[in-house]
Amino acid sequence: MFTPQGPTLRELAVQALSSTMRGYDLLAPKFDRTPYRTPDRVLDAVTRAVRPLGPFDRGLDVCCGTGAGVGVLGGLCRERVTGVDFSAGMLAVAQAARAAQPEGDGGPAVDWVRADALALPFAPVFDLALSLGAFGHFLPKERPELFRQVHASLRPGGRFVFPVGAPPPVGSRAYWSLLGFDVAMRVRNALWRPPFVMYYRTFRLPDVTEDLVRTGFSVRLLPLTDLGQGPDGSPRARLVVATRR
Image 1 (cartoon, helix red, strand yellow):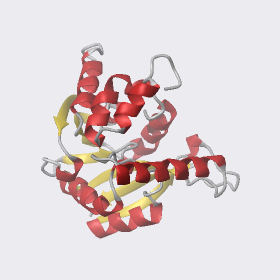
Image 2: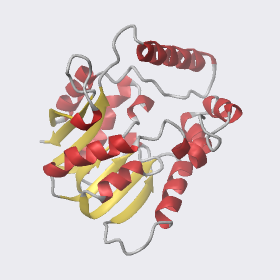
Image 3: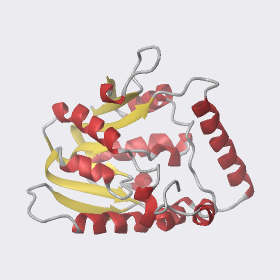
Image 4: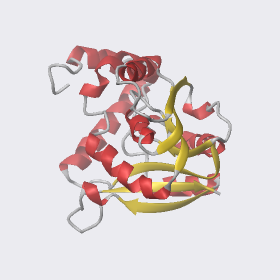
């Protein structure tokens, strides 16, 4: 996709007709060469915004994929970082990339756990939980349970953070692109089994905030100023900081 090293059209078609888990297992070896991987500038902006909220000892990357968020947590946490994902293929790529790094960098210990984010196997031991680019894989009806699982994995006072981009202006090219993608996915899932769950327009910030508060979080929003402003001067992205009460 977009580069010679990325997945081919045929590979993307096979992935799109697979289940969500199987699709990511197939995509994993080339995932970091696609636009789906969170850009470094977003990772850097999140790191700078979260660091003043610390210090943190233990971090959890929810739906870690190939480990971009684990890298962020590695620069924020002092003792241990855990990446959790349901895709064995994505975890294998993440582990291989970590193993290829030089030893003795003095960072926290890193664990990789294969588990469904809707059934996290953790006690409340984490100071910080992070998630990047994964929420489109959860239907709105599943979101409260996702948040309950993260809440149960955090210590009291622990933070759950994630970036949220501003919605594109109605009628813009980005607006129609995201709408078209979601419509295509709904048609695909109505006609083909197993479903591949990925929607861009189901994670509305007011609804998300309400679900977080109902779960037992207090919520505030921090502008990610490094990612720029819209024409009206509002930030193009915000960091949601949900604190376990």
